[in-house]
Length: 259
Image (tube, rainbow, N blue to C red):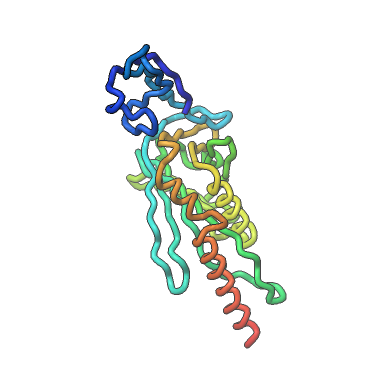
């Protein structure tokens, strides 16, 4: 946040005014003794909100206020519990979660285990009053200007590696995610790239074609920060995911060896 300050005189007893480490609002800054007394004159800190990020070459059709919610999915068999985060407000829903274990159907060439890669799966659901169906690539944007294409399809069969479903029912929504028809290596790598972005950055907008939706939520949103903390490469979750991944591949490899 950028800061501006306006002069604000505070006439309080020294014993009642904790200049250092105060947490009460409004914050007082640049406090100086008032002449030869035990009182202080301070400036009142005014926080000026940064303008919201607008994706290049788009026109915002809405600014949606809300917050992110974090839940921990219970473990399945030997897999660790994994975090799941969702932003949902005014028919705009963005959700992403950590994928655990080796991907189903993987072919292991020469029985060599594949190195572990952290993978995060995105899912977007948007009311068609914002984005007409198939109006353009559904793209998530981050505060540093980087972006991630969730889907970019001409139809909804998923054959091109993307998937999008347009509901014609009263919900009238568009759902976008990475298609299950995506080749294994491409799907793995895209989810890995998405995970790397989330380790250091936060989603601030979504676009489709020439339209965009801006997300208005605190920079220090606790759910976003906690998810980021959980997926750090030096954390316990990362270690447990890698262990489970290697274990699954070991079981699969041993099964092939016994055939």
